[in-house]
Image (cartoon, rainbow, N blue to C red; front, side, top):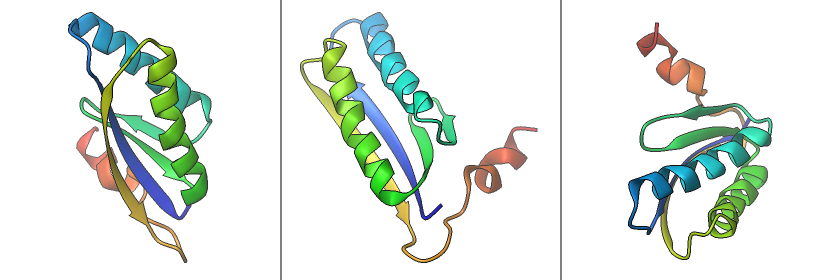
Length: 98
């Protein structure tokens, strides 16, 4: 696992329930990839191969669009280590959730 990506999709819609519906569809897509992920209150973190994660980041925007979102802001954080492994979600946060 040479990369970890945190993605936040913010749909530009008026209704809070619509924001939640669209974001839930994006999260469902991320979970469907089978990669290890962690859903937080502001972003979802995914671990895996860099190229695969970049494809997922791109597809998240298409998922939101298909869900009816005409405009969105997307924020992405990337931890990438071409040779070797990045710190895992588990190592970063498990101790805080026991």
